[in-house]
Image (tube, rainbow, N blue to C red; front, side, top):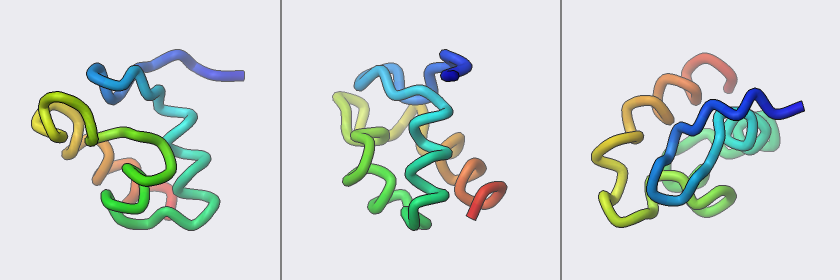
Length: 60
């Protein structure tokens, strides 16, 4: 079911995992980080935070 599009390279979190977290109520970057680990890797979201924010806007 996963589309395998990796959003968070550091923690290998894919787009579907992030979308599911948003649909389950994670409507902030911090909440998505807590549920998925995205933006919580070595780069602290430098590579993926904007992508996560865009997904939150699209799916919240």
